[in-house]
Every structure is written in C-alpha cells, then in structure tokens.
Image 1 (cartoon, protein in one colour):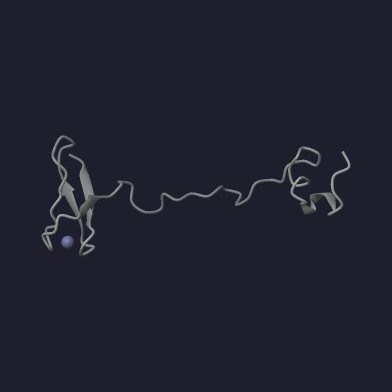
Image 2: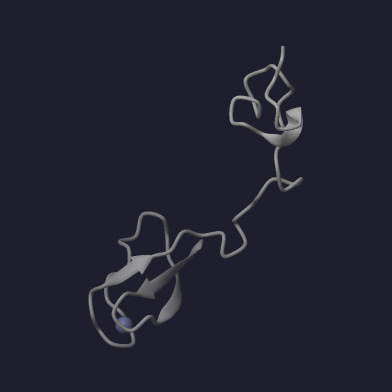
Length: 81
Ligand SMILES: [Zn+2]
C-alpha cells in the first residue's frame, strides 16, 4: 500500500498516510482540522536536476548560435562565415 504525503496549507503540518490508490484523498488536517490539505507529489526533495555539465557548449561559428547574439566565441567581431 503506497504512502502519500500531505501538507496542510493552514498550519504547514506534514504527515503521511498509507492508503489505497482508490481511497479518497485526505482533506482534513489531523493537527488543526482545517480542510486545506494538499497531497504532495511523491519522490521527495532532490528531484531538481540541472545538466551534468552545468552549461551547454556554445554553437559553432556560423551556425546562428553565439554569433547571432554577439557572443565572444567569434572574438567579438562577429562571424564572417
Ligand atoms: Zn493543519
């Protein structure tokens, strides 16, 4: 049975509920009793991923890449392709 994580929008209380996928989602906060409970996307934190290199390689000269944007790869003098 999967566990779902919920967070209350009113008191920020976070809790986990084990329930069947067919069960109704929890809507009442067990702590403050308000109905502002939202189910969090499972997977937890750390799902943010950036490219492994951190940046994309600049496009080749004459390919409409950095030259078109006045990039420095052409020595600042533009592309003479
Ligand atoms: Zn609450």
